[in-house]
Amino acid sequence: MEVWQLPVKQSNLTNHDWIHPRANYHAFLNNSSLCGKFHQDTSYFKTDLPEGNELALQMRCKRCLKKIADTTK
Image (tube, rainbow, N blue to C red; front, side):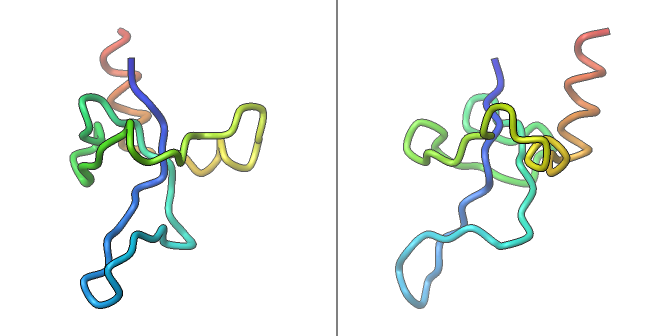
């Protein structure tokens, strides 16, 4: 089962993790996003998609959504 999370980036200059303000939620399966853009430890970062938040549902990656739709056919 995939997990919807915001991608976390690591800064080499400040040595801390951050999330881009315009980031979309991506579906992660085995620590890799379905669109292939991101890899992260999904059990370490807690940036899950909030339930019932309509705005967050609109901020999902279109490529990840398409991959899910293609696999459920």
